[in-house]
Length: 639
Ligand code: FEO
Ligand code: CA
Ligand code: CA
Ligand code: CA
Image (spheres, rainbow, N blue to C red):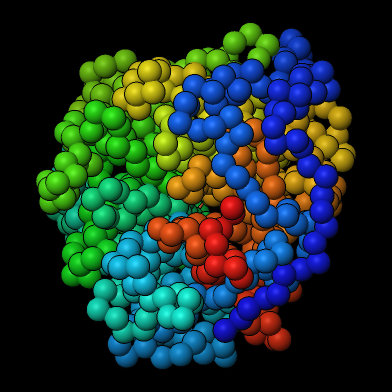
């Protein structure tokens, strides 16, 4: 097992936790900037809205949650760096065998299709922790994609065996863990262990199930899909199921043949980025399910949120079409005060949108089985943001995506609700949704009606005609990203309107003096780029993970490797908590209920053959891994 002693720490100067208003004033005076394309002077950073929103929460004290660790410096080391007093240990890595018949990871061959199907998948991403008892639990974790440069000795998918191996490296890994002598450990061959791959049978349910758009030769019913892939982030329902979100599904399809013009040039194929060229994943020559010329509807069966019961390894995962088909990032589930279940979702592509689903029926805490199909019936909405003139704050509204409303008619190309759901992006444009800077994770505050989203970056902002600078996306050629938040009207997550502001505008204040310096709560000591993973802990600390440029040069000088930070939503303070190894992304976070262990995902260390040997060190093959982080004194992480 790998452990790591804390690094040398520097005690960085940081903002006074109790005087955020001073920071805001400083922001307003120091960091005004011109909007793109010569638009008028825009006061940036809605500080006053932020303070008010925080105060409106009532349950949180003025100072917000305590963040007790000493922040760490950026670095470019090939290891995990944590604050003084913290320790880490590998829980599971790509290729760890955990199902009966599995074989230990083979660093020479990197395994076979058969061995991969019995092992932890590649590129762990979003994950959830499901308690069975104080020291026993199930973890479900996404395996987003495969690093061909490590999965295959020759770096390429060039046979049916390779295709099956890659497909087995995708999907979801579900496994039991136990805490033994204070250390959480993967339990190989435990009863609930399961692999879900790109070939596992699934059911399509909800309003689009059975639609002509979902029918294929192999499945004339349009209700039985095979597999899930590019599973990015996740959600966890209060009835104990796991939600896995299908993101960049489009690139898995291709064809050696040219497609009929009406298919290749269709608005849907273009908007979702589906083309004969594919993205180099190269399954289509060996598995005709992925050949668009043969199966043009197969991509319509991906881009969904999939619900999995982690407590029943024989259960059939269900694709919930009521939640829409986009490049889903995560699915943040909230039970509204009135019992309706609300799911917030981002669609991660430049200029795409933020969505919300509201269940028709109410959650019944006393009868878990009654909740099983809550995600099949309800209303899908997309967000439109309006800005107060000259300020990065304002109001917004949720526009309903229901057939027959807001122009979603047959004349506009939507003959029924199934069409609206399969082509959610097209419907969102018809109703006038706001284009966003790549919505990644959405996180809802645990005790207040307040919701945060990471907008990771957008090189097209201010460049493409449909993506002019707007309120929550205030910078052209946005290389740094921002975190926006909103409060639903009346603290009611089902409300049709909200108020919003910008919590943090990432930037480089050591390099820039304008808007690209970032908001006042970004300093040379805590700066980062491309916020992505985002989650609250039970105490209301906001944990931010990055998937950014780790060159540590030019615009990104001083930021080092990808990292994880902890923010106080009330004061705006942000402290760096973790720095990852070389060429990784930090993504996926889960807590034990006692918050004494935090699980964090290290994805693709050493991607593109960058020099990493994480986590084993020496000359080992780098492997995506789930890390368990705890304090040496056994207290709550972050406190
Ligand atoms: Fe899989 Fe948008 O990150
Ligand atoms: Ca992400
Ligand atoms: Ca990302
Ligand atoms: Ca990733």
